[in-house]
Length: 125
Image: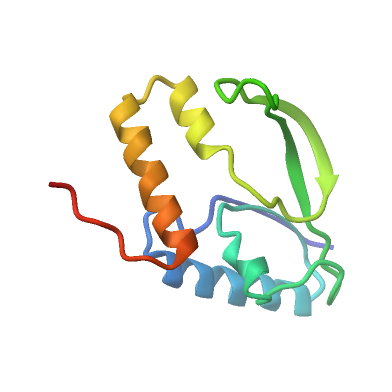
């Protein structure tokens, strides 16, 4: 009858370490029948099938965010939970909305594209 709340576990760690420890902790908590509410940006836990929605009592929800097709400058959190793992991040849109320098956002887009395509990231000249 224990409820465990975990908010952004692993912040400040190397991603691989945070993912490994969080996955292990969630599996252990599940094995002893704890109810857990966990927020994380470690989507790799699911894309690498380290944990699966609906397996061993897990249920994955995501926060709904509306990003208009015609305007990438606005993201609106809907404060509503939906079933499943999010497929994308609104990180760049949120950074732009927060006033992050356009050169920083452009560089972030370059890095993301290189990572998605499996290309090396070009150093800043």
